[in-house]
View 1 (cartoon, rainbow, N blue to C red):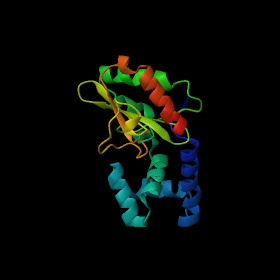
View 2: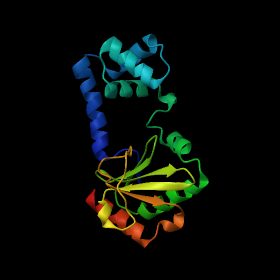
View 3: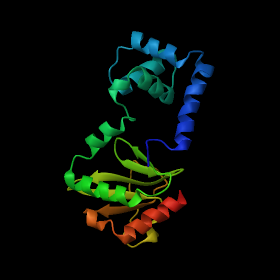
Length: 190
């Protein structure tokens, strides 16, 4: 199991870095020097806004520059911190661990931790889970809601738009053969 980024995402981040010098005339090291010397902001959004207003650097490049300049800040790519912050309820965490066990043997699995959810991908995202109040978990799947009676249509979820079905889970025991089959079907589509 690989943590973090799919091959496609890794290529995208490499292209951001490669185009940075070409398009701005400055290397990542030069940008790091600039932001460390000139930017007085401490919050990520304020830093990005400062870089945009001062140098015209867009959001993706700003995030990359600040991640290199301040790695200790623990941004979106600090998976362990994001996971600990998100999965604080023991009941929800037990369900997450049951989902992780169900997908653990999928070849080439990439687990990506985000601020609001944990995602699983192959080439593209096929599932995501987020804790809900009361110790449950909302599981999004890259399937249609009509794939199984237990599935419903997601409403305003922050995960990938590919995840067209949602499953409410109240306990680890609900990760049964049907859910494992649904996870595998979503995986096959990714």
